[in-house]
Image 1 (cartoon, rainbow, N blue to C red):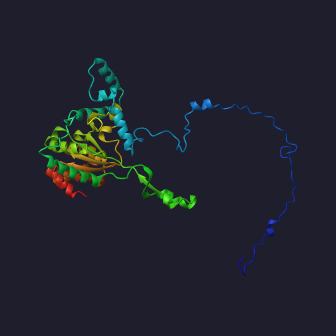
Image 2: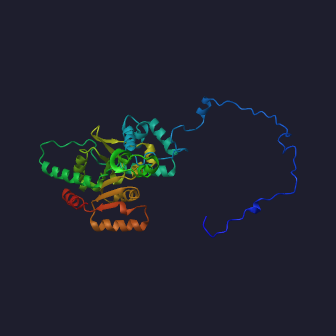
Length: 356
């Protein structure tokens, strides 16, 4: 206590009352009656818990899973696995989507499925149906031989394309894994509590594949030779997802196992707008095409980084961006890198040199 300070007076706390304590039978514990109540309880058997919707997993966040595509977002491995499973076998809904309804029974079954679809789902199906017929891609591309007159030019294209992939590839953006590439901020913050060694507070991240989509619609017939060469270069890499995308709608996926483009979409995928890139989130996408699929590309910039190698000239591309910006379409042009005037091999090589 500090000097020259009067201590607190606490005498007022020592008070008494003159009233007598009144007791009642219920207040006096000795005279209180005893309650003779027996609770009937039954044992809970383990089998009865099976009928309850209770998750017994460790570290479960509780609640039901989000509907739709939430489990596939930010997980390219699950997306590829799903697409590969869809392309296997004789899937009925995939046959319906790609128009194989050659019997009366199949047509009636498809009509019944179509009737129970909502208006939005029907519109998405018709959107895919219209653009599916635009696909003019060769599903079984022949790889060039070792002796080719255009071998030198193809090697130049391969070198330029590899530089593009190295510049814009998604590197270390996936799920956290054990490694020594980055510091783990959460584990560093917990060191004050658990006294963990600082050398164990490091991690790595999975690498995501780069998505390459090629417009195979008739409006890009002049650029078909360039796009076919790019497709041949893409299949040489194991970390590229190659899609046939007429007017930016996904129709076919290239299968490295089968060495050809395969059908991979089902009716459920069309309902969820997968052909318009709804599954892609936090991905890097390279699209080659014209303005026919510009709405799909611009909408995807809200969640993805898009490199748009457009066949139109620079002034047309700038006008299109201004027009779409005024129309209020959902977009994020900070995630868009538009490279105009790419209609032949020389233009593509010049753009690769300027790309940063």
